Length: 345
Figure 1 (tube, helix red, strand yellow):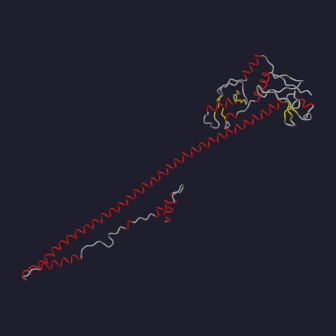
Figure 2 (tube, rainbow, N blue to C red):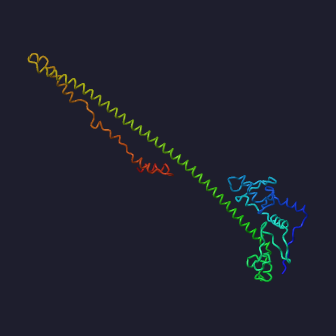
Figure 3 (cartoon, rainbow, N blue to C red):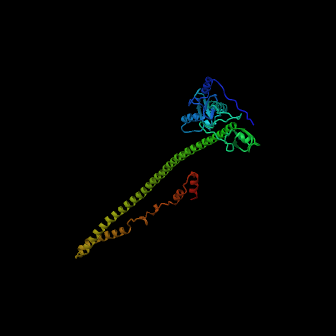
């Protein structure tokens, strides 16, 4: 059974050199490496080169942004996928594959069987285990395994559907590349989420610090109000204390003066009683008797402090209401609620 061969890219050395220049990346100056992305300005880039260029100008890896074409300076607005959101140029990739196959010479051909391009430079050709002299050059679509043409003609795959190895290779390689693209795009989204989480953590820390500072300032204000009120109340107690002490000491001085006068009068009366002569006694007794009676009456009518004058218990401060209000202090509680609680008290 003979399998049709693929055509080859034939051209002069000059045309091949010109083609190679057309297939060169303007960033790395080497031939494009897959995947190849096409910009809206129709210029092509290796996606890895485009990604490196974009990352160098977007060090914080923000999603989206502006990408400038290195060839024509055209600005492209990227979506949240960044460079990975650009379309692939499959035509250029296929041309590169054909060009590389032509440059590698393709190897020898055997009895009309199409030979497959090497998977990578310097890779060793795989031989069939059933037919040791046959290369693996076709793909069994039915069994989903690569095989040789002899297996298709005479072996276990003779009733199976087969396809050229190169086409299946390119298709699965493209499928894997697309899967990688999807995975990389997903990684980009995860990286964006990680960046958002880091930014959110920083914002939480900053906001918490501001909230702590505000709370401390509010409590410092409460402390200042309490200290001012404490000083005012202590001053009221001190003033009443001074007034009462002054009043009591004034009474004490008057009592002392009267006591001294009464003692002197008592001494004079006792001296008069000790006089022997009646005439001499009677000369002073009448006046002493009047003075003594008046002094005795005055001591009974002396001004005295009111009962309980010395007490200071009317300055007792009830703090239960304030303690209840302070105990109910919480975040998000409006002043009206405190006023309601004050009314209930």
